Amino acid sequence: AITRKLRSVGVITGIITSNKTPQQSLEEMKKLPDYGSIDYVKQVTTDKPYEWEPNPTDPDSLYNIVVLDCGLKYTILRMIRSKGCRVTAVPCTMSADEILNLKPDGIILSPGPGNPEVLDYIVDTVKQLIGKKPIMGICMGNQLIARAFGAKTFKLKFGHRGSNHPVRDLSDGRIHITAQNHGYATDPDTLKGGLEVTHINLNDGTVE
Image 1 (tube, rainbow, N blue to C red):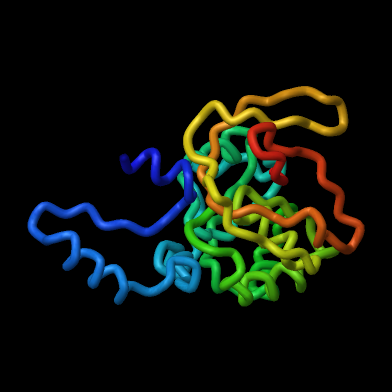
Image 2: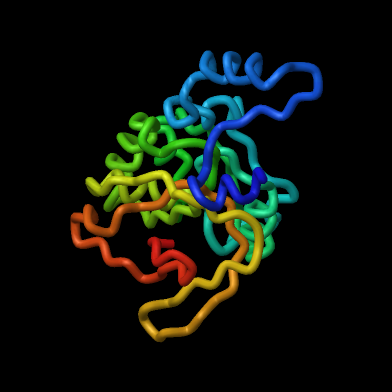
């Protein structure tokens, strides 16, 4: 019954309980804040910058990469490090000047929980970094970059969760099978600043 409900109306808030009546649960849900209004990123970001160990001992390591932690997974840091790069994760509240003082060759905005529309302080930071260093975003990070260029984001009716998500590369038509975990997407009709959509989800046609 729960699955059928979700497939018909999309993502909704719910309570799973064994010691309350349905009416009590409904009353409790009415008191909960709207999911999309909460800044979850500040709750999960690192408290202070840290370098991912082990760092390259070779002073001529490929690149110095700074990752803005919006709720990142350590796998991201491990993969960057495996390419011979120096990796530093920093809090989502770090200013553009502080990030640039780390002398990065590139900046990555990590994935994270919640609604990108409530993260104006990160968008402002990205705006100050645009044109100064190469920037890449993953999931929410990608959406925050789009917002920095004036685009809008929206909540997906059905979030992209788990593995086996087909994504088309529009440059050559190839299909990539991906693992995803995000509930928001960028509205392609609001893209500005010369941005171009290069990948779309084949299940619902949204921007990846």
